[in-house]
Length: 479
Image 1 (spheres, helix red, strand yellow):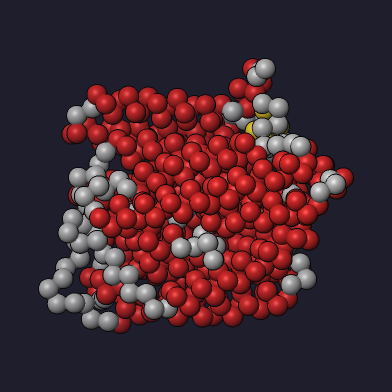
Image 2 (tube, helix red, strand yellow):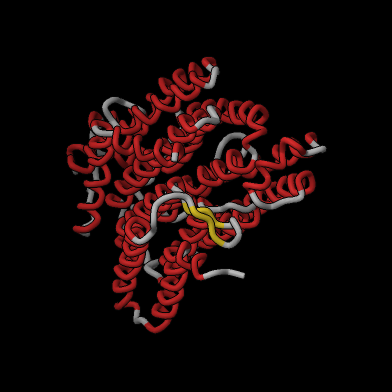
């Protein structure tokens, strides 16, 4: 039976569920002209949830519902940054949605339900909880991708995402069933202790392979990346921003819970699998990104390569590697929101600002936006002293300490190759002449401009003072 203590441990999650239901009901009685109140209410709900996580939860590691839910330092950090990036998505999204008559309550409630999925996923202590959180996140994401029902591109992307997502969920469940059959438990903690004494090691490894396929799909790692370019291009840009930021934090949390909390004793098997996925992701992501002309597809292939770098940290299979990987996931979430935020600030009804050629001469037309985009791209490329440089450095160092020097060399080589397509966009913004007849009209939303400026400048600030955040990440795993 659930106890009052269990409920207290999950107060932020219960609050967010209740708030999502209230917002859903409020939207039904609101006139379209009053929907701006729903926008600010949604942001306030997320801010209150952050407050509950930071100040109203005691420290240490505790569990609820017989170990199904874990509240620890790792979950706390991932939840805070998932909520922060979602607040940024809401701020960036409003002008875009209003211009295209997509300013609907469904966007806010579905996104909040997806965030609840993220929070359950990163706190999962049981295979059932992992699947519950994953499906809540992905089912909400499918609907968000198809939000623009008048766009054939959006509908096509949603169908592809749904079909491939269903396939990967089936594989993940199949792997979980094999592991359950070999150990007789769904609890990750009990699974960890049961593996050494299991009489069916081959069945465990068989199940592990299918579980890693599910993790790779959620991360968008090659060769399970097929959905990313089409979904990034076809989805409304605010939805792409959410999928490219908060859901990547969830994917890291899922990988950590499954591989370390549950299958830590099989590290000698999954380390090599992750190393192979990392090499494929780095190669496919960076090489295919070079030939892209659409900025959203370029950032999609960039995502694939970044997930390769995140896997370099996980390959280490020690607190050092996990903290480096989480640091990288946080840095990528902030970099991604900044890059897509600039695209949202420049786009307007009838002009999506999706082609690289749309950025020609941006420095002459909107110098501040060009500067913010340059900061985001330099950070994604790993140019010092940006945040992304130190994140890459840490995961490469983790790979070296894992005894995989060859993997670190592959990562360094593809980091150099990846510079090309990021610098190409910077060159287009600063050295190409603007296309005649085009005029940049920035979104007049003051909140968007302030939030975007802070988002991009934080990438520079954290590049100069990254120590406290890294220390926080390390403490989460050591503790």
